[in-house]
Image 1 (spheres, rainbow, N blue to C red):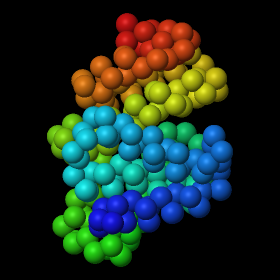
Image 2 (image 1 turned 90 degrees about the horizontal axis):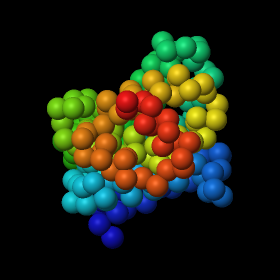
Image 3 (image 1 turned 135 degrees about the vertical axis):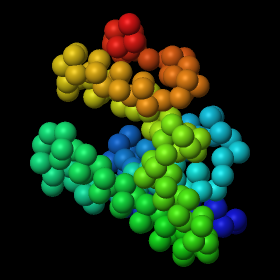
Image 4 (image 1 turned 90 degrees about the vertical axis):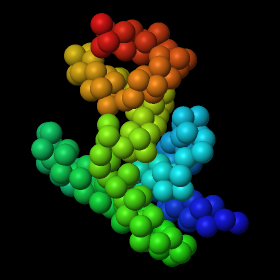
Amino acid sequence: MSQLELTLLAIDALHAQDPTLRDGQPAELLYAQRMTRWLKRLAPQGSAELQIAVRSQHLCRWSIPRSTYPMGRTGYLQWRTELAKLHADKALAVMAAQGFDEAAQQRTARIIRKQGIKRDAEVQLLEDCACLVFIEHDFLSFSARHEEAKLIAIVQKTWGKMSERAQQQALQLDLPPEALALVAKALA
């Protein structure tokens, strides 16, 4: 097995520890697999650093519950900052154990932390994958918990984070009519 394959297996072993199940498997393992599927569609020849970053997007996320931070935007942003640090630290530990050099580790950390989004093609690809996974798999259940005005704002914000290519991919998704109606309202 290659260094990259061994690294991805070790990351998946960490994901498999997620106590939350979704569709019968650890939730973050399922999320990582979905992220990787989108990356393979958008950039099948992505660098090892990008592949590791995409697979590590939510690495050990369950260990820092959202409830440990204040409600509201400030608390949410603090939580997301701590999560990005956690995801990067965990991924880099796995990379180091598999013999990746410091430059590869730091590049992966920058991608995971989304440093240079809209300026760095690999960071943008990670964001595109995350947005597409959200729209394809989580948007409908998310919409059941929130008012339409908030959902429209979220779609607009998500859309603004995506590259034009990812936006086109999102428009081709086979979404239920109620989700399509919300997307249409958000983009009008």
